[in-house]
Image (cartoon, rainbow, N blue to C red; front, side, top):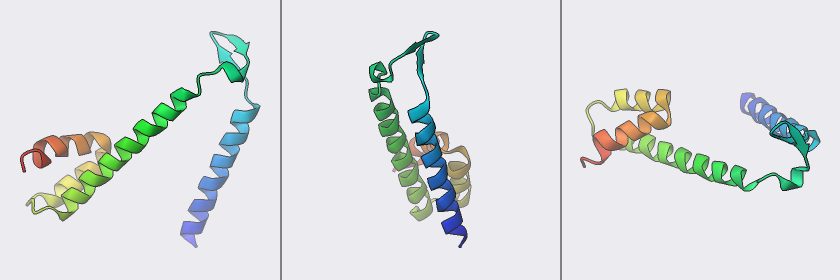
Length: 98
C-alpha cells in the first residue's frame, strides 16, 4: 500500500508540474517571449546527462555490493549518501585499480 501511495504522489506531482509548465510564460532577460522560441533542446541534454549519471551511480553501487572489497559496507554507505560524487570516488579509488 505504501508503494502505491508514493507512486501516486509522484504521478500527481509530475502532472501538476506539467500543467504549471504549460500555463507559465517564457521570460528571457525580463521580457515575455513566445514559448515556441525557447530552446527546449537544453532540457533533453539535461535529461540525458541525468540518466547517464544515474546509470553510472547504479553500476558503481552494484559493483561495490558484489565486490570482494573488505570495506564493502563503507563504500556502499559512501555511494548512497554522496550520490554521484561517491560513485566517482569509488570508480577512481577501487574500480580502476582492478
